[in-house]
Every structure is written in structure tokens, then in C-alpha cells.
Image (cartoon, rainbow, N blue to C red):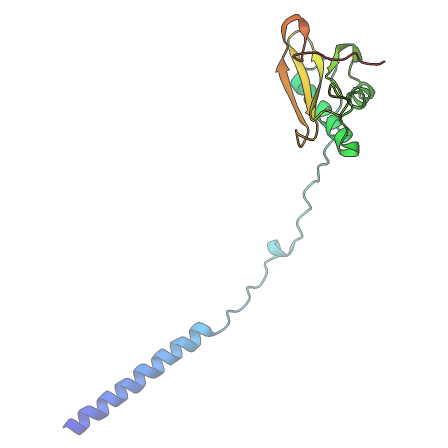
Length: 165
């Protein structure tokens, strides 16, 4: 009887081994590729591409509506020259349609004649707001924002310089 029990155990072990091996082979078999349906084979129409429109001056708009143009002009002048020349920004803003009579700009040079590390320029917008830009080596990337006007319709604090026309 012990011999017969040993033979049965051996057969069970072989069957178990073959079953396990067989399942492993089936699990490793490649899965067939699905057949594409008519829907899947239709080519999708390309998404419409949107091109970013160039910002434009909105004369009757708000300061916020005109900030994109103000920022674009500021970045363009800074990118082209890295300039801390206030006149370069004023000229570019005037060319974009902003009113020079509403602008202010800080000094380009320090009291000893060196280029400033940071300068500001602005456009007064309406009776309550200003578009303000700041550039210079210490500023890093140009900064532009809408701010409330100060007393007497000014946008910038401190001494500003005359704007050449």
C-alpha cells in the first residue's frame, strides 16, 4: 500500500506541475490584436488650430483690457535690447497707440551717471487706473500691471523725468 500511495502522490504532483505550467504558458501567450471597427478606422478631423491674436489697443476699454498690449510692447522692447532707456519704452508705447500725454517715466541714469538698476514707466488710463511697467537688471523679467492712480492723477511715486516728444 505504501508503494501505491507513493505512485498516486507522484501522479498528483505531475498533474499539478503540468497544470501550473500550462496556465503559465497560456498567461504568457500574446493576446490577439483587436480588429478595428469602422468607427475606429475613420480618421478624426483635426482640431481647429487657434492662433494667438496680437493684442490691440482698446481706446474705449478698461486698463485691464489694454494690459495685454502694454505688456507685449514692454516685453518686445526688453527682449530686443534689454534696455533701461525710458525713451525706448515711451516711443514703443506711442507707436502702439498709447497717448504720450498720459505717460510718466522714472530716471534712466543714477545721480552719478550710471544706468539705473530698475526703472518704471506708466500710462494713466481713465480717471482711476494706470498701466505700470518696470524693467531693469535688478527686476529680471519685465513686470506689468494695472494699479490705482495716485493723487492728482499720477501713476508713479517720486520724481519722474520729462518725456521727449
